[in-house]
Picture 1 (cartoon, rainbow, N blue to C red):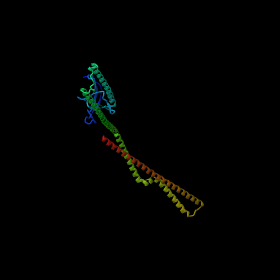
Picture 2 (cartoon, rainbow, N blue to C red):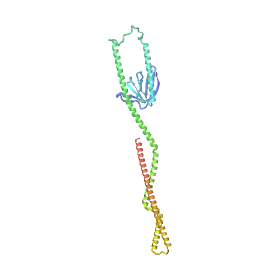
Picture 3 (cartoon, rainbow, N blue to C red):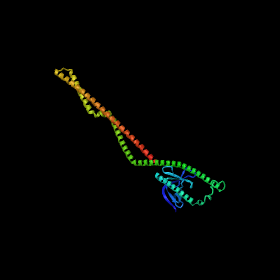
Picture 4 (cartoon, helix red, strand yellow):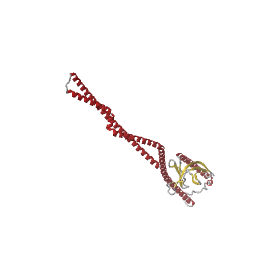
Length: 352
């Protein structure tokens, strides 16, 4: 009833394993309230935490205690009276700093309270009313009697205190190393888990979009495949024959003209053996022959041009066929990449 709370926070509570002195043992599954209390009756400060009906922590703070920060969110202190080491895991570094600052303030207040208590004891002690002749000799320098027993007990207490301090220091160092390893492993696992959750959420958000894109690629690929098949069929049937059929009107016309001129030349040559009536007719015939030869040459030139145009047409068709084949190859690669992406996504979903 005489204790008053002066500061409270929430933290996960641990105690050092008394068997191994190396590992931390959690005292509860969830964070509990940890409070500083001031006992006005005894003039002492305590750290108290209650879980259900059980006092998890009931530690009286003394000026010799030290609160040590072992990581950004974990701190510990040793209680020699309870023969244990307490550890607190906080939700943030700010909560740990607040608890450590309050521990230092309470520790200083406990020191001042002890000094005041000692001053009151000295003022009210009956030994102060004795005269200088009545002051008893110090038991420390006495060679016989109860003084030797007091000296032995004082030395034994000092040795026990030194041993206890060394043991507590060892517990703190071993516990700190183990706790830091645990905390580092915990944060690593937590970071990996957060990354996996983020990747899973992103994958789920993009699944529909990937499905639509895959369907569009498949449809476009199918269209291109059909087009390539049609072109291959046309190329097999047409090759050189169809190309010549496309330009057949012009070629037939040229061939007919060539044949007509050749027929005229043969007729003129047949008439050459006969007699010519006049020189004018002979000259006229010669002129016709030259005209026919020129026309024949022109027709041959036009025939060569037509054949060249036909060759260029066939070359362009071959080029177009190669381009369509390249497009089909690219689409096949895209489909393969999408299938691999789909498999990776399925593996990611299964692993999570």
